[in-house]
Length: 224
Ligand SMILES: C[S@@+](CC[C@H](N)C(=O)[O-])C[C@H]1O[C@@H](n2cnc3c(N)ncnc32)[C@H](O)[C@@H]1O
Image (cartoon, rainbow, N blue to C red; front, side):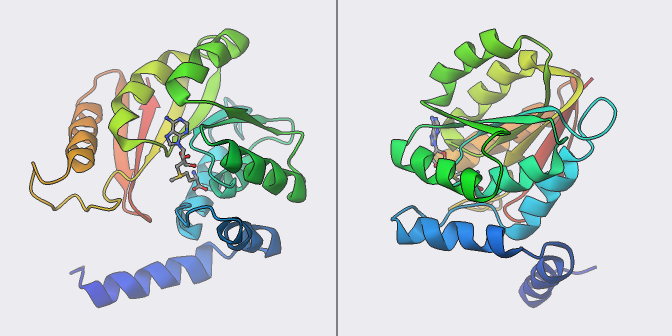
């Protein structure tokens, strides 16, 4: 299939309409957040549905029981993930901004997920060691990374020991953000960091890696 810009736009709309319809709860999250002054930078609905789908099969024998999210914003991606998880599952989502934490906490309450999602305020690389002590090594079924692109390589190395064998890490913006991957190297530092990380993950013998071109591109690795 040749991919023209028009065809890409059509197919994206099609994916959204057919596979990623938002219910009222999901549809209300980002308009409410934007009204409160948060940036409109949540994942797309089709990426959200993909996260839900992955969470529904990332556990040892079915849905994920323990998941981590790096970068909560207003809780939009977190709601998709939590909905895919086991009914007794737990999502721990880390967010640096206190404003975003407050907004996300309200989102999870409104979506009936307050008991199942724990939002932790702080910078990921500072908060993660404390969470690691709490949950232990090789305990996590699924991780979703969507925070500071320049720190992505450190997030992956820091979280890998916490992921169980067979667990998955999903990384947003694997193909685009304010940049796209077809930009020549040397023009955007974040693009170059993500490019280097993608290449490293693709060749890492500890992992099986691939990438889906949904939304801004979601790279996925499964720990062997
Ligand atoms: C793209 S948004 C996350 C969007 C969210 N995953 C969604 O789709 O609904 C990135 C979030 O990461 C947060 N963030 C950026 N750097 C961070 C860090 N070092 N530690 C924790 N949170 C961080 C930002 O405040 C922002 O809320």
